[in-house]
Image (cartoon, rainbow, N blue to C red; front, side):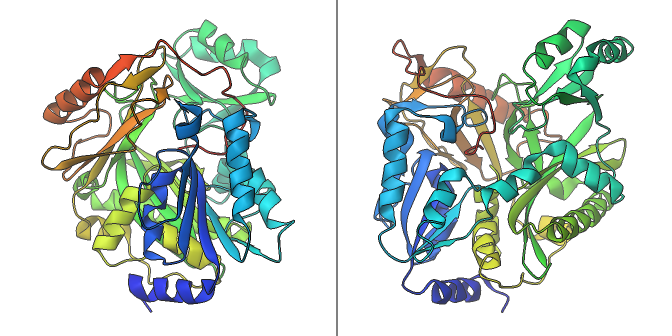
Length: 457
């Protein structure tokens, strides 16, 4: 059983009379699951799917009137009226046999699964177990002991600020990182000792990490899925777009993926990355991890360094699923569901083969670059070879650093991930500037930031 349809048929047979519910950051992320006939309900923070194939497509932003920065927003700490309404709607959805798949495990999922364990099948890890894999120092330290080449993070206590400042004064630039972060929100460049003081004031767990700035580099990303028998699958290798000034205010902010540009990488880079992924998947399995994951890496001075492991779906997952569908492969979403149904992974494709066979495709994620909230003045128009997704409605207030929309491009858009090709850069900058207006009625007083965001990009 190797093709996509055969796996989906087996998933449908396993689900039987259960309805399938998606709960996650973006409703649009559920698109690959539409092929499973039992998918009936979608609950999200932002960007509803808008499909007539489902009975419920509930997005928090349509009721709160606000699209938050998903890299810092914490749904479990949001006690606003609209967020409580969403919780009640999800709880009320379980009236019969149900299976639930989520962008990442979270507390409400456990509140659904355990009191209703006779009805609910949880296609996700227990959130208190999964959260361990969110802790970057632990994960990368264990992988370093397993022999992987990891970005050389140096862990420093907040009580040892002076020693860290001395290290900064002896280098031209360093990178500061919180122990838990997503989308580049927890990273910042350090150029002066006072920059470190600003970062340390926000540390709430006693220590942080600093590393040399590895420049120039190329950022890589791939998705994967670990199955119960230790087999694994790989999905959508790409050059990652990081800190694109037309797309984000953040120096290390996530801005999308170029799935075509990986075709231009040296084959040895792909092979080294492949070997790294094999060891990461084996380690995750040895620690009891199950389901979707992602691995970021940096190519610096001709060598591949592990940057981080994402124990969840990723912002790249939906577009990688399009590629898998074109190749008649099991995509990462259906693979995740299959993994929790005790199936084995399909035959493994190498990154070299995936890069060679995949169509050229890219996604560019635009964020609000203003210091105050905005609204879209008009719906962006698709041009030949491009289409817009995750577009907020005109009455939704888009908070600083929140997603404006995503542009999917039927070609490669970058050579190195740090800059867009000139024509697409001009187009993206025009989109970001002309389609937004200031929002005088910014309604962000109820949003909760900080802590561990459970619904992130």
